Image (cartoon, rainbow, N blue to C red; front, side):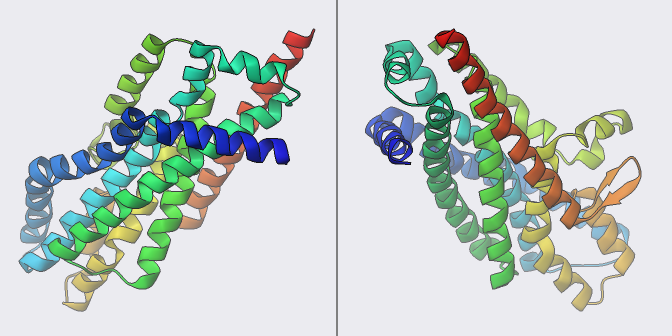
Length: 301
């Protein structure tokens, strides 16, 4: 454990010492919040108003703002928890480029311990940045329309923590195979551009073709996005019901923004979403550690 603690401290210090890497990771969620609020808020607002008007219901600007803000916040956090992890985990690649990784493998450190050192230090860095992003999102919701309870905020924090665990494990498995800056840049660009679509953050999965919906239903990140949606919008939906909105209308809106997900026609409950996400985290971490152990054995052989 002493070796693991030393590796975590070493990796964390190097990450925060690299100001370019740190500020890039930190500013990305904030830029996304501004972009989402500027360009997507009108689209989301028209969607919510259109759905309510079609049902003959009218909502206050505050309630619409809470719905729009909840969808924006959940989208941003769903993307940031994974994309920031890929930025924070670049130290693993940098150590290969500089030769520091080779020095660490020569030292009496087990491959599994070395792998966990990278994973846990990336986890801490990513979690810190994503908590800052969560605070910014909560501030945005306070301005747009606040309908959250203390339980909702706690659930959001749990969702963020689980998605950071998943994002860190995923980035660790991918970055394990990278050894140049060009490869790292290419992977970062692909993840930043594509992950938001396949997890349903940029566009609700309910609007995708049925075949693509079924493919995406196998991806763990989809369920993380849905959990964030449920907890960010629960209070707003409850307020709609309290104001006398028809229950079927509220349920249709929940379907349209992916609060309700379906796996081949069967509705996935929140408990099942947590199970899928937790199992995916455990499998990804186990795979990452196993890859490092196998590589260490090959080198010794």
